[in-house]
Length: 497
Image (cartoon, rainbow, N blue to C red; front, side, top):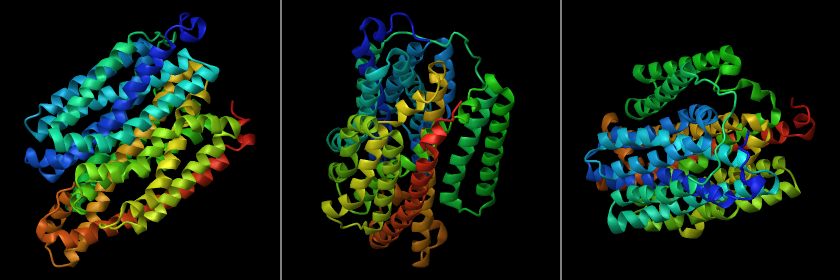
C-alpha cells in the first residue's frame, strides 16, 4: 500500500524518486563490469591466485543473487525507502573499502558484503517505483530504470578501462563510492511505503538458498582447477542440489509465510517473466565479464580499446529500454520478449566468427544482436514482473524476479569461467602441457593474464572455447524464445488467478 503522499497523488517527489532509483541501479551493473575489467590488473598487483581472483567476482555475485528475496521481504516489512537508503550506503561504503584493500582476501570479503547492499537496492528500488507510480508515469519510471541498468552496462567496460589505464584499478571502486552519494541524497525524498501485514523474515529459506548457491559456485571454481569428475567437485554439486531441494520444500511448507511466494507462480505471465533472465541476460553478462579479459589478454588490446570494441553490444542497452516500453504498448510484452530472445540466439550463434585478430566490424557482427535483444528486454522485464501481480505483492514479486535474474547471472559467471578454463586447458594438455600446468595457465588466461610463452596456444584454445559457449547459449536462447511465446499467449495470461 502506498502512502497517501505518494507522487501519483500530489505530484511531488516523482522525479527525485525516479532519479534515486535510477542512479542507484546504475551502480549495480558497473560494480560487476567495472570489477571484471579491473580484475587482471588487480590480481597482478595483489599477487592473487586464480581461485582468489575468481572469488572477487563470485563473492559479490553470491550475496547479490541470494538476498533480493530477503531484501524484498524486509522492504515490505520495514519500509521500502529505508531498505533502499541502507543498500545505497552499503554499496558505496564497501566499494571504498575494496579500493583500499591490501590483499585479494580482504577484497573478496568486502565484495561479499557489497553484494548484500546491491541486493537491497535491487529489490527495494523496483518496489519503491511500483508503490509510488501508476499508469503512464509507471511505464516511464520503469523505462528509465531499464535505461539506468543499460547505462551502467554500456559505459562500464569503457569507463572502467579508461580509469584502469589512467589512474589504476582502485579508481574503479572509488567511482562507485562517489556515485552512491547523489543517489542516497535523492532517495531521502522518496515516499515511504510498507506492507501492512508486516511479513516475518524466512530465515530457513534464506539460509538454504544462500548455502546452495555458494556450494554451486564453489563447485564451478573447483571444477576449473580439479576437473568436473573430481570427488570434491561432485560432492559440492550434490550439496548444491540437496540444498536447493531443501529450499523448495521449506518454501512450500511455509506457504504464506515464505519469502519465495510460490502462489505467485500460479500466474503464467509472472512465470514467463521471471524466467526471462536465464535466456536474456545470461549470455550478455558472460560476455561483459569475460570478453574484455579475452580482448586484453589474448588479443593484446588495451582496456580502453576492449571497451570500445564492446560498444555494439552495450550501446543498444543504453538506448533501447525506453523505446521498448512504447513498442510493448503498441504490440505486446509477449512480442518484445520473444523477439529479444530470438535476437540473442542469433548473436550467440554468430559467436563462432570470433577470433583474436578480428576487426571492430567482425566483432560487431555477433555483439549487435546481443545488445539489441537485451536492450529490448530491459525496457519491459521489471515492469512486467511487478505488473503481473497485485500491488501488495510488489516487493515479493520484485524480490523473486531479481533473485532469478541475479542467480542466473551468478551461476553464469562462475560456470562460464569453469567451462572456458576446462575447454582451454584440454586444448593445452593435448598440446603436451601437464594437466595441472595447463589448468593453471588456462585459468589465468580466462582472467586476462596470458603467459607469453603459450600465447598462440592460448589464443587458439580460448577462442575455440568461446565458440562452444556461443553454441550453448544459442540453444538456450532459442528454447527461451519458444517458451516465452507459448507462456505469454493471450489465452494463458487471461486465465491467471
